[in-house]
Length: 329
Ligand code: NAP
Image (cartoon, rainbow, N blue to C red; front, top):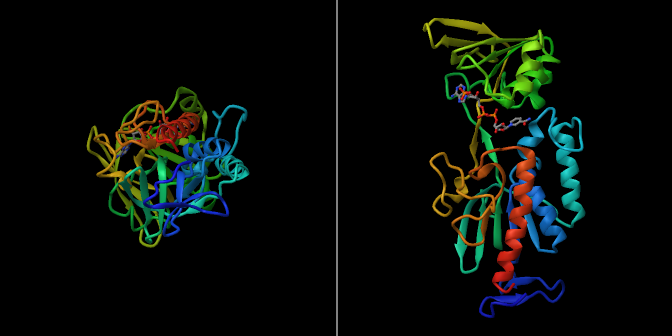
């Protein structure tokens, strides 16, 4: 490591590069503790890069909210919280303690970035791996916000048990909607999947299992217009988009799985984003900003899976290491 003599000193105790005001400058800041961020941390930890891993809520990201994972090699099935905690333990094993903060701004200075969280804490780093994933898309219909937490949910693993023996609706037709319907079918009395088309987007294996499950029924070509209920959900108003007929579907809970929105607000104005908000970066995770890498679900990519996010994390970590070497650091 060389010093920028104007602004930096080497900490006598630990040999770390600090700004003269004792502001530490990390080699790598990883934003997001999902699969991509944790994979990156394992690689930067093993490479002895001074790393901070900043997570907004809890490590695991969307993986944490997944009931059953069946396509993670080495495990026939594993649940999301278990896999998340195993990955976090591995991150800690390499000396990286996740810290908590919601990064709201990323500023770029000369050969360093400043990351600021929602309460004004700052971190400084030579490189940044953005791995903030995505959040559930909302239906944005009457009743959704008002009844969130009172019957409206975006996480079957978290909330499914509240609906034991009751009727619930799952909205959506992708892998998440069908996978979580299968999970809920084991707990609740009846799952009704409401989908806007007459065929599912989910993989064929999931489709076959859902069609064979007596506890799951489907309402096709239907758009949900409102979620009904005063204090808690008691049903949904649904419109058939072919014949325009309107009906009320009774339900004590509604699980919404209609895709995701990338968590890239903190990159706006700095990184190039596509029209849907994903960071424009290829398989090399390199963005338009030197020293900034994008890994996992937040980047433009064809397949968003835990295994592809893990691969991105590894690639981004190595890219960051090469970038630091190119700076002579
Ligand atoms: P997704 O694949 O984008 O599917 C979203 C579903 O919601 C689609 O069926 C879509 O309908 C419907 N939808 C979208 N907007 C809607 C709206 N405004 N109103 C009503 N319905 C709407 O999302 P996902 O299922 O969350 O999956 C996200 C990614 O994670 C995918 O790449 C998926 O393969 C992956 N994933 C993988 C696994 C696994 O491998 N085990 C599990 C979960 C997720 P249309 O079909 O008509 O577009």
